[in-house]
Amino acid sequence: MVETWRATEKAHRREKYLAAAGHLFAERGYRAVSIEDLGAAVGVSGPALYRHFASKEAMLIELLVDASERLLAGYERTIAADAPDLETLRNLVSFHADFAITERDVIRIQDRELANLPVVPNHRVREVQRRYIQGWQRIVARLRPELSEAGLEVKMHALFGVLNSTPYTTKLDGATDVRAVLVDTALATVLGSAPAG
Image (cartoon, rainbow, N blue to C red; front, side, top):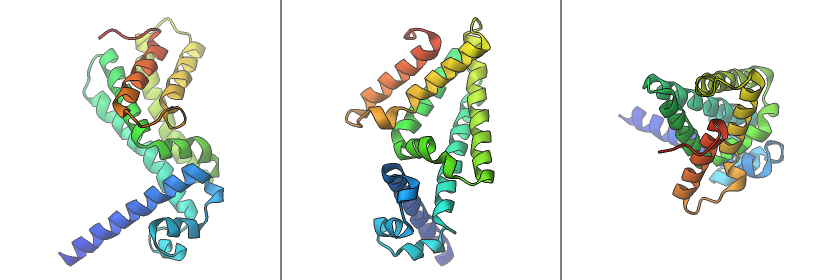
């Protein structure tokens, strides 16, 4: 029982440290944040973080790999419902919009800091992202068969540009309205007009 409590407490501390790192990396940039800054943000000495992470870089790796894997898992859960393509696309857009609104720091880090990852985790993140985007692309291609390959690629870039712009273009006041506008705009981006219903 004590070991379970300790493991739970350690996991909570680890999550707290990662959240603080994510916020600081998003606000200041990865290279501008020291291990001492990270420790100060959570009320411990910088070196105390080494009990949980091998390095500052390990924190960045975990943030970016985890985010990509959570997005792919959300995609896989959504398509497992085996709904019609339009409903699946709506559900995917809603899922990603929720992620972008609640994980604003991670979206910013993903946008700016991917190049700071070492080769192996960088490749892992890019591979997971590729699978995620290709899954969406197959659905959009079925909904928009008239699009050329280049046109489809432009639509996909525009779609994710809209969804991932949230940290830069929105305030969280009235997050429900932000979400609704984001979902409608993203769907219109790929479908060509605001979807009915």
